[in-house]
Amino acid sequence: MKNEYRGTRIPQSWYNLRADLSEPLPPPLGADGHLLAAKEWEPLFPPSLVEQEYTCERSVPIPEEVLERLSAWRPTPLRRAKRFEEALGTKARIYYKDESVSPAGSHKATTAVAQAYYNKIAGVKRLVTETGAGQWGSALSLACGFFGLQCLVYMVRNSYEKKPLRRILMETWGGRCLPSPTDGTEAGRQALKRDPNTPGSLGIAIAEAVERVVSDGSGESRYALGSVLNHVLLHQSLIGLEAMEQIREGGEREPDTLIGCVGGGSNFAGLTFPFLNPGRGVGRPRVLAVEPTGCPTLTRGPFVYDHGDSAGLTPLLPMHSLGRLFIPNPIHAGGLRYHGMAPLVSHVLRQGMGEAWAVPQSESFKAALLFARTEGIVPAPETGHALAGVVREALSTEGKGRVILFTLSGHGLLDLQGYADYMGGRLEDVPIKEEELLKSVQGVSTFEDALGRAAKAVQPYLPLLP
Ligand SMILES: Cc1ncc(COP(=O)(O)O)c(C=O)c1O
Image (cartoon, rainbow, N blue to C red; front, side, top):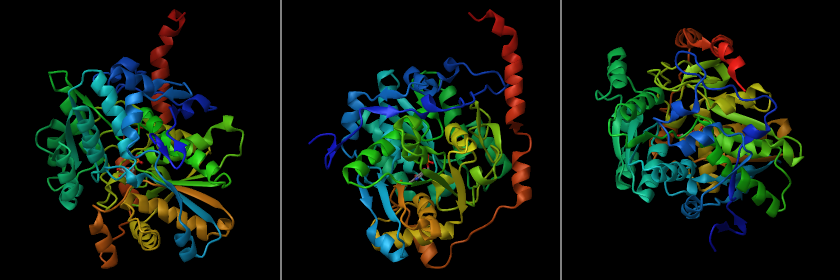
């Protein structure tokens, strides 16, 4: 039985929430503030992905070859966490979409397959990327292996040192992995000059990967991003689309609360956006994005135009940001240590369609440990944040009688050191001081300033338009 899991088929199209926004998503800008033309993304991404970055089509068909690869693990299971509910003593019914069943162990493999496919058919030979905890790097190495592409991964040094097994996994699938910052790129050298002992950050690793692609004279390399951008969120919509059908088939009512952890925003958007489609004609669920207090992008970062990388090589994106030079505390959830947030997620929350919470890592490990001991699956430290949100929600008085659905975004079988530290009482929650945050967002263009400058720049050309 292909493309099916207990009667549910993989959807044949991705869902794009952009088609249904009441206020349009603000556009990306060039580093000097000009309105970015789609073509300007092309040194980084193949034209088909650039098109998906801009499209406002509601439904985007999934190529047959992508469906065929994804059918190895999709549709992913939807399960009820009954023993977890019992242990919490809640009346809420808690469901999870289990993305940990992908070969790489997380939801990241879904966009990795689509991205590798589109690069392959565009004639690209090598994909270069960054990774935090290694989930994205291993997912892309897997997908590059499927399509015969080379894969080079800049892995944030803190995780490279703490999670050697992830590096070995990348190499097992044929990828090459370097600890970031390296001294092989200008962005890496600058970061090492600022702090020779830096634990690294996703912003620095992205800068290194982008620099490597744009300085590669062969034209055969492209960049791949595991979150944040519209096309990545589009690919992850399978999570919510499948869950919707599985809930219906299981005879359960519509979930009233949806919860996901947020790093760059892709698993959260993947689960929640299909449920936010106003065309479905059902009430909008409560939607909660959970981030670490060690990297509080949505809860404490202003909404600005900022670069996605530390060196300012990527376009300016309208998003919540802690500033591109922000170095988050070295928490175990390496995949949540990102200074920015997906523009679409930032936009949706600004429109009042969802809320954000920040939880300390000790609370996330407490929830993850209870889940492991009741349901059996050891959640990734990133996923632990979603679980902490689930626990808070299920134990609140509002939890009574609720149907909660969350993304189990990945397993933590290669992240056990975090569990060992938690169980051994060695886990630290280091709060970020307000002065530190203020310093790191200094100099970032406010949203209004950046958009105002872009509007002025296009004004003289408007009369020339048909
Ligand atoms: C297991 C897992 N969950 C969540 C995330 C956060 O990423 P995103 O917000 O794009 O889903 C990551 C990132 O690496 C991850 O590995």
